Length: 98
Image 1 (tube, rainbow, N blue to C red):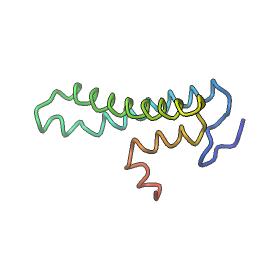
Image 2 (image 1 turned 45 degrees about the vertical axis):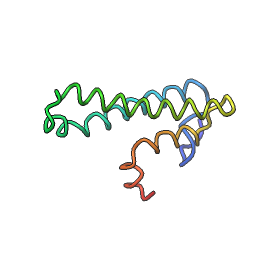
Image 3 (image 1 turned 90 degrees about the vertical axis):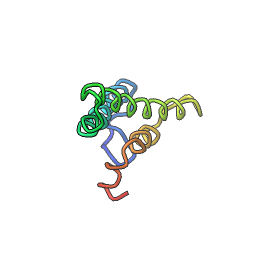
């Protein structure tokens, strides 16, 4: 295992990357979905539909970024993976001083 750093995932092997990406995609879904609960109610959209729509849009954004990075050279580096997740949520980057 490699020590976790700013541009590294927990491990460098394929399964560790897949597991890390899956967990982070789930977190993106929750963060994106939960942020619209109040907004959906205000404009008259069913809460569950609003959460699912927002969560799915967040996940699609990350998957698109990962796909584009993979297309370049057929590999996903830890930096490319981290960049894809940082780009999806400006709030997280702002909290970390970026």
